[in-house]
Image (cartoon, rainbow, N blue to C red; front, side):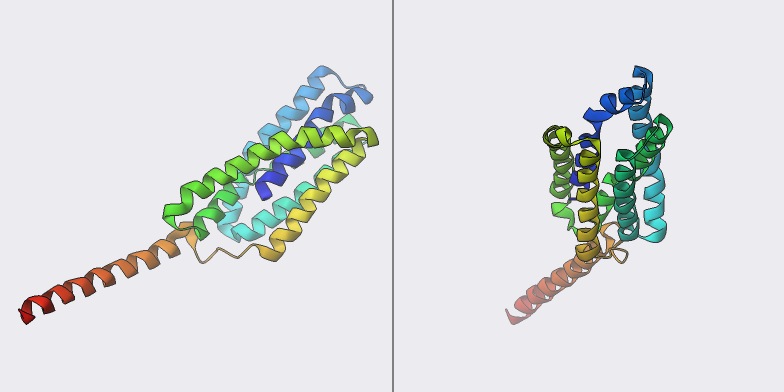
Length: 205
């Protein structure tokens, strides 16, 4: 859900960049720079947020990312100058790098045999957000840029609230180690019981 809403919010704003920039007398270069900064900061943010997740916990880092994304999406809608557009777009990109955190959380709470399928669902959710974002923005755009950015911000804030309420703390299951450890502990016991059963059967004969 976090990945879908992040992609949705980003793609809702993307089709409006040329109109917003030209309304403030921005050039084609500024339009390209805005999106380039978003992508660059997303790469940088993924690295920083990944390190923060290891230090402060994945749940806390994801919540901080979602809340910050909501704030900067709304700020982008009320920006009054090109430099503000650049700054808010870049900051939104920094906090939009939540895919790696979500993948780490899935790895923590999912058994190894189901992990690949869950990872695929994350990327599928991202793809759905990329598809739905521009279309939804097209419906809302007649009401203004602020309406689009406010809607994207509201979705992200709702996602933050749901994560705050439902997302478990996975700090005790680092990289799925807890689940795998429990599985490893159960397996030897089962094999040992089977071996003892065979030995008793041989003695009985």
